[in-house]
Image 1 (cartoon, rainbow, N blue to C red):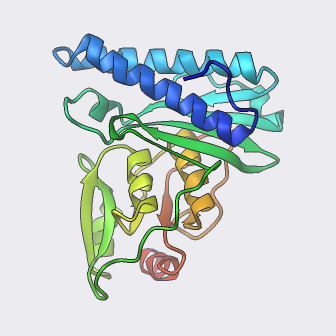
Image 2: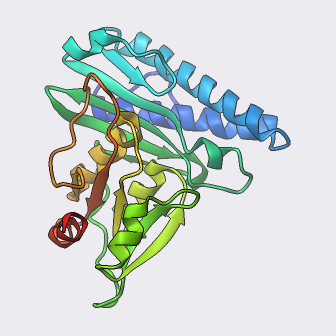
Length: 253
């Protein structure tokens, strides 16, 4: 891969996510899985260092909000803020054979998500706003349950409540990025989360989902807001626009 990144923000986000993903794959090979905690710690740290170093080199005037970095209040006055998650799905990264982990790189500029990329390194895939994926295919059979991506270790209680109102099928998987990517490619119909998250968990995958033509909002239907003083963003819904009214009505009834 060339050391010179694309000039566009969308292309740069893809380039950067790909580089961090390549580093994480190499780290898995070098360290192995005998000490998962050490592997996870190294993955978080080294991916963060790579992302920050490249942003400082190629976008020095921009602010950065990273899961692994210290928050800087100066970002609130910045017009351009990169919101990154160096390793989304740290638990899955440390488990041999698991591919449901990701790298998130998003740019929040002019009060909107202006660019984003989600690398799924173990799936050999990068999704980006510079070349949005095609709209996901419709479900195969009318009347089948709504397939919802859900945490494999701690699904929110909201999903159990939702199952009392709608025919749903939970599809367990790892990181938030992997879940939203599954909505984007049509493997599931929706991702509904209310168990607590932060801006870096959703900024990049939401940017790609919206560029694809999908619906993304808070579970009460309001707009997802980024670069806020408190970076907690506890809930969201990502799904087809045609499915959004039904899901939001059931969640809020």
